[in-house]
Image (cartoon, rainbow, N blue to C red; front, side):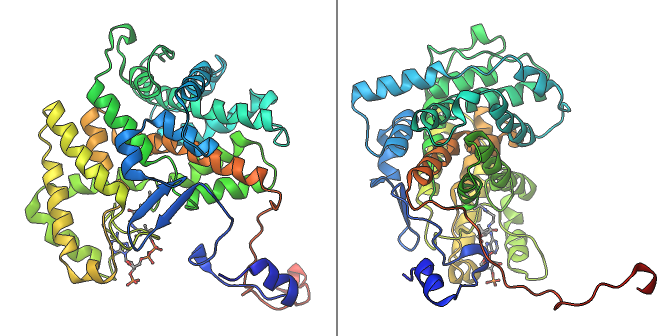
Length: 401
Ligand code: ACO
């Protein structure tokens, strides 16, 4: 590892690394990935154990605070998050300004950015207490904000949080409750969704997290930073891939059509890619995809849902992983390949998939942001460039051009 800061200050040299393929932008103690071995750890704990034995609230505490909570610490944390689930009533007006067919991610970018106009008591980033309240507010309000985006898109009234429910149960009720008073949380669905949230909670310096850090490095307030992260996550090469992957599986429709799509993905003259396949860091199976595939089986069987798309997905995976192109390029299913099948079995429309990803990733974003702000070496992120434009030249008057 070369310390570029030192190299630059001593020699004036800098590196050219489009896409930051081999550049570490920070030091971090949150998440470890070994892409070659397919290992993902949060604060040292494996994603397999966390998704099997922990809850989203517990994993959130771990990411934010560095250690697993005691029972009392977890109760206090859950209580604190629960206390912050409401959003200001005036935000309802903001929702109503959007078109009904607005994508939930468009609404999320706007509403989360707008939180900075409501919570002036938690935008002073130099104050650790304000940073803590802002972090709790963001984690707590994201389910309310995402559920409201959904309710607005289908023309139903907003459902207020029921703080007697779990974080995930409350989100399910705010999303699917019609009428909310009669909604009963299905424990299978609640557990599966909670696990999906754990699988998406953090993933070191991916594009959206780097965006949050870069925005935060200028001193921007946390609500604005997370809104920037949501915007970045939306892209189909990143969090938008879960929506794109399910749409692709539906488009394939039948196992007989899989070879045609595999050939298209291999054709360099066709921009088509297998969505939910490939990863910048994993050159082995994405461990989150393994858990997700197992969870799909459990959820479909518990809900008694026969989804032919799951068979298409399983066969597509099998055929791709026995094809030289995918083997040589080390392209495996990523977390987004199977998640859409569970989410649609639960009842979410595809347009909500990335909003759910944003909801779950918020804890990772705020933990990374807090880590950055607390780092004494923190400085504004300011990449350089290789200039390829014209050399200096004299201005030409408009009549002479
Ligand atoms: N289908 C077909 N070919 C692919 C795919 C794919 N899904 N992914 C990569 N490749 C090929 C590329 O064409 C390239 O081939 P080449 O070397 O002959 O030019 C090679 O594999 C390397 O691909 P890059 O795009 O250079 O790899 P990079 O690390 O930049 O991109 C990415 C990773 C964006 C995830 C890419 O694999 C992709 O677009 N996948 C589909 C979208 C997707 O599933 N995104 C979700 C990622 S996970 C997440 O964000 C939560």
